[in-house]
Image 1 (tube, rainbow, N blue to C red):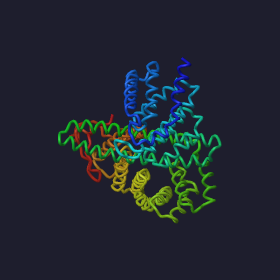
Image 2 (image 1 turned 180 degrees about the horizontal axis):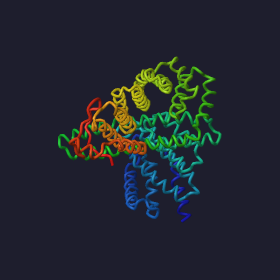
Image 3 (image 1 turned 135 degrees about the vertical axis):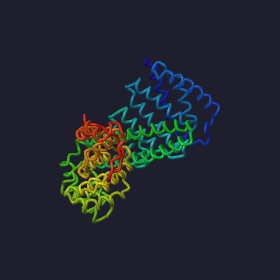
Image 4 (image 1 turned 60 degrees about the vertical axis):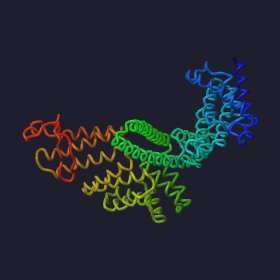
Length: 483
């Protein structure tokens, strides 16, 4: 068995010889097309059998590996499956030969590099996929050997610089972990963690924004298909919607993981200490000021003098939605809601989707503090449009409804606001499980204000009946009694 593994290792590592010359061939099937087609058929047949066996180690075949190697060497442009299947083959070899792991990882890296040369664009879409390939290469290096974190870090850094939009959730996670390893092993300064954290959270925010926009388009397309009675199209859109929602949740999961990994390096005291020194060196560095204000805002360190100073410097140097947002936070915390609202209105013009969402959310809270309930609800609704997966805007609306109870008179009318308030809480936790605890707490509080069964009966209503709340609310709900 040992002899067989050594033989396989020699066969695979032999790929390093002659690949570069073959990669530039004009022929898809190489210089000997007949041999390429034959070897393709052999390895694919064995690969299908191995796949059918769910890649069981005992079902792997030496002839499959040999034929696959020959295809890679003689006709690397024949098919992308040479590379995706090759990953599975090398994964098997890495796991079966732990002592030779690094040699196989080197071969895997060569495989990914060759794919980037031979298939720089996706044959199906025509779009560049080099950054995605490099991102996957970095992920695989890191996953197979954490000790090669520096190599993984450099590859993933290059991938993000090439095209951040191609970064999948797993690549982002590996890049940040590799960055932390770099700092912990003295190969990068602590500032690198802060810089990469901001960079990657921006990438994730953009991913979520793009996916949210796609979700809206898919839902509209599905609605059109339903109207025309095209059931096959509806089923197709349902599958796409499910896949898209999974991608949104994956990105949200990575964002939470980034926050958790960043936490040990992100106390307000630590951040302020690092940023204060940097700002003292270059107080008019716009890029630095943006980084300071963004990170301190996300870590809820906005009470610091540093945040205020950086915000003012940034606004003076470059008036922008981002700078306005930071000033708005200061005014909001000082309970100057009218002034804060002006700045948050400017902030809604930001190109950063997460910043726009947060600006509308703060704007809603400003108007709530001014008892301008209609404007507050409008801002909360806009926040939910920016991020349809967020539940917080619905909780804001719920609090607005409950807070306006004194505007309504009558035994039922004054209690009805709590029905629609609870409706919003239920909606919030349905679309965003992260707010479930807060939503349930509000539901318990608001449900206590429901009218009694007797009150409902003596006002000629019945439980389960539809009821429209008037005034500025203007929403229809369902009558419920206090329990």
